[in-house]
Image (cartoon, rainbow, N blue to C red; front, side, top):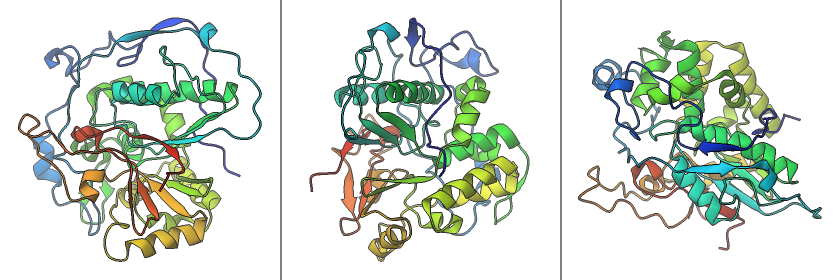
Length: 366
């Protein structure tokens, strides 16, 4: 069996005043730091990359929308995290309730608020859901202000949930592959299928944040590199991307997870790019034949319904809203989107476009 994802290394828990937005890195500097205002995500100039890489993507490759508006929020508040305040878990028979989280993309404030609303963490940001099971569907970084803070939170909750008899686990998203590639390979040319590209350029074009790269540590890289690509829980096949490309990596969940992980272990830039390219495809379940595509995955890997992130619900609905946040209230997302003859559940609420960061208990009452 593959090792369960999201089981980060044991982390020493000491009482501390934790800044969830920029934990433990507030004094770091970089070449872009002087131009940033407090509470503002730092973004390098992307214009130089637009012209150079408009034509590098192969046929069928659908990158994350470059013009997706990024909604910058203010600074986060600090909350005291005291391990002594975590109640001693009481034995409970059977697994706890199952929750899934859509794409976070660095929006730590919104994540904390959504987890608190569902009763999964307390006012101090600590796990308080006992034997509950929590799955993140990937894409923790890029576009939003604090991707590393999101990863730190998920890693900590993994340890706290396990101690309480539940769990907090995570899947590999295409932006984890992108960040890993940018860190490992930088400007090393890769064969994109339509010319030469680099991970560094693709990362910048798809919302890469200089502050995340500056704060990225080995523990974050190791955690991301061993995330699973898919899992089946209570009849729900959990994946990040709405694509059939997972079929290229094996005929079982274990085989897919092992093959993706082994590709990352070989540390070959072209091979990692190929995984990134395939898991960045989208909309396989939306159009004509979408239900059949879902069934092909369910027949191969099991489950009765697929749950995914990656493609924002407003795009699936054909309602992308306006780029001008002042003139538009933005897309209205109330909850998950069920489609493909009821076989697919989309969980990316479009938080990067003023949508909603979704945390949902399964099964849905449909």
